[in-house]
Image 1 (cartoon, helix red, strand yellow):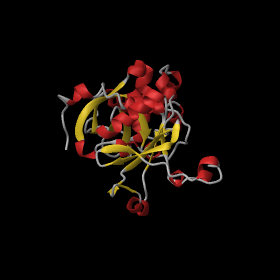
Image 2 (spheres, rainbow, N blue to C red; image 1 turned 90 degrees about the vertical axis):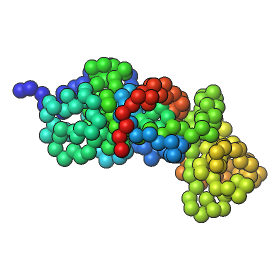
Image 3 (tube, one colour; image 1 turned 45 degrees about the horizontal axis):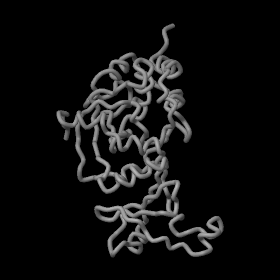
Image 4 (cartoon, rainbow, N blue to C red; image 1 turned 180 degrees about the vertical axis):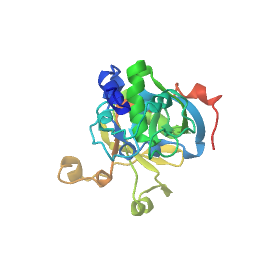
Length: 266
C-alpha cells in the first residue's frame, strides 16, 4: 500500500538534513515581537519567505513548549489530506485555499523585521516546512505568500543592535493599565520596557520616538537581596527574545529587494 500524504510528510521530517528543522518552535505571544514594530508602516504584499525565517506559530493547540519544527511535524494528523497538498506547498499560495477538509482561508504570515510568524494556517505551514526542507534544505522558500510586513521601529533598532554586540537575549514587557497611568517619563506614557539579559537592571523605556534609560530606583535591600525583595519592575511579564531571533529581526535582506516590486493585496 502506498503511504498516505501525511505519512510522506512525517517521513520527510525524519529524513530532512536541514538544521533549521531542529530549531525550537515559539508561540507568537511568548516572543511579543509585535511590540517592537512600527504599526503605522505596515505593508500588505505577496513575497517569497525563507522557511528558516519563520520562528513562531499563532496557536499552541496540539504541540508543547520545547517542540522543534521537526518534532512538531509528527503531531500532525493530516486527516483527508491528498497528494494535492504537495502541489500547494511548491506553488505560489497567494489567495489559494489549502486543499484539505476543514481548512479555512489563505496561508497568512506576519513579518516583523526579518522574521515571520504564522497568522493563519499553522498545520499546513508546519507540513510545508518539513516537506520543502527535505527537498531543498535550509534554502527552501514558501512562494508568493500573503504577508503583512511591519518594520522594526527605528528607535528600537539601536537597542537591539547593542544587545547583539553584547551577545545577549532581549527581554520586553508591557505595563498593565493602572501602571501605564502611574509610570511615566516626563509625563509621557511608556509604550514598552526593554532590557538585555546580561544587564537585567538597566531598564529602558520606549517613549514616543526614543528609547531612554530609566533611573534605577531599587532600594538597598532590593539590590542586596533581590531573591527576597523583588524590585517592582521584576513583577511584569517579561518576554524573552533569544539572541538568534534578535539577529534575524535586524536582517531583512531577504525581504527588502522584494518589496520594490511586490504585488500588493488589500
